[in-house]
Image (cartoon, rainbow, N blue to C red; front, top):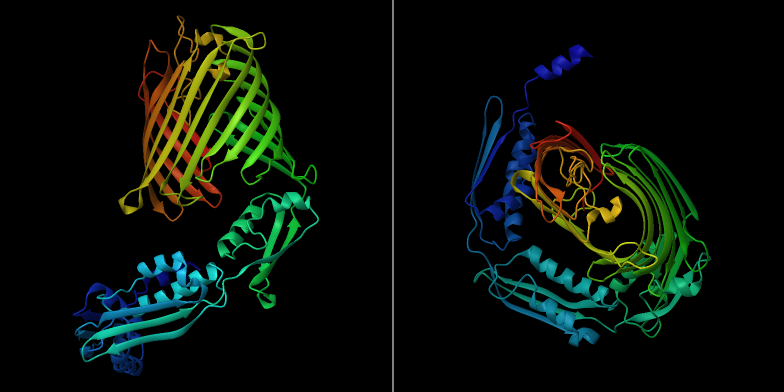
Length: 568
């Protein structure tokens, strides 16, 4: 094996033949090179084959340039064989390009007065005065046919397709007549399933008998059913063979996902240490789509147990009502906390992409810091709004994420403290030259309360950690008491700038600077951390390892941060 490897390494590289094309603009030259068979040959190709393809080059060049409207091509070419290889030169004079001097497109049938067709005709890729381009001519026809199918003109066809070329005058005429025929509507919609209540399933359908037939509504229905979480397969079929009176029957066949799902996991997070996870989902508590979720996380620093019962509302694709409860234990270097929460939530997804959650939490917390401790009951109403968009779910190069939250409480016999709190989290990704990307991040929070020590630690602000100021321990930063113990703050402000650059197909490196802190209104003291990172773009999302140094006083002189999953 070793001698074979050495032999392969010592073999001289294959010499590539020299083929030059001159006299053309870039798009024409690219088209010619795509068509030339000879440009695919190596130096060791048989001489007879090279000569044959060289002779055939005139035809291929002419074909490539006619596609772009050049009908008077003159070619000067040469082929020279050397000892080790060969060289082919093509000097091409394309001549005058054919120009479109008349475009006549008629739409007949029910689509004659359709505004969508009027808009399409105004934006077709070939107009009077444009150079002739056969590819764009074919695109024009395809766009008309595609719009007809998408809009319910299922029997439409061209009754006239003419491209008339006057080579002597270098002009072209386009004549197209498209007869759309009658516009179709949805006929009977039959749903085959025995999983959920029929009336509930129909809430996911965007197609109704008698509505105009469009592929958009079919796709919308398919996506709604597929993303509902109830169905393993969704099969939607239009029965075009049994169309009567322009009515197209539609059948929908659904098969169920498994009712119960169990999940178990093990991992590690540099903020909270080794992590055990277990989850449970019951997708169908009843025939009306109610479902139940439970999630358990166990780690030395942060452990949680959460359950939630969810009820789809009249618009199950966008609206849910849920009730739940949870337990949380958090032991950091700055505080210890045990809490229990019961909650109600209304979740709504807007058509513009924003997701809203209105909630009411009733929270009990027993907490201890180095300087104070307490037990509190808080009735906390609030709301959160989330918007996220990116160009790739697993490896985005462009996108952003915004999240706002506002909540508060009023002192009553069932709530111990009055306060108001707002929070903003934002991330922005922007692609840079040479394949790199910039990642900007900020966290901002503010609390109005008589004294921050009245609030339990879950409602105070801290900084430090992988998702905060790197280079510092998890929740290490914040305002301190007279003895130098961190007690949490009324305000939070963090800014981060990061440059990430790919070095291999699935690997990248990063450099970053984070600055910020948690503080009170009377004391602002930012801390800064800098570092380098390694990125692995795994099939399930990015894995990040960051090596960070604190530039200000810290309990640690060096931190390694590890995290998995996307940021948007």
